[in-house]
Image: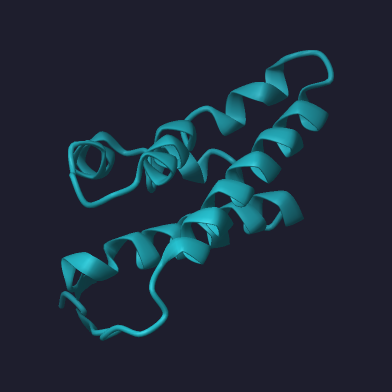
Amino acid sequence: MKLETNNENAEFYLASLALGLLEGMKQGVIHPEVGIWSLARPSFSNEILKSPIISNDLKYVIECMDEIDIWISFENGKVKQQKMINELKEKCIACLKKIKKKRDWYADCCFND
């Protein structure tokens, strides 16, 4: 599948995706390792991190997605993991609050055969 949108909408869609993944992790329906293989995957995250149109807060969230699962191996890891997830969710929410509400929310997708 390929999702396409205007550059000005990238922050909205990426923050929304990250927020959804983080909430799924918090609820236990998405394994924290998913962060590594989705948003933190180098071929994806490198493009985000070098983009001038993505906020530093959202770049921070993307960078941290591959660190969420590591907490479980430490003492009191589940608590620390949940704390990190909550902090990253707050950053996503802050990003979404800053986005102008009136804009063209264009998105298009196509599925590969």
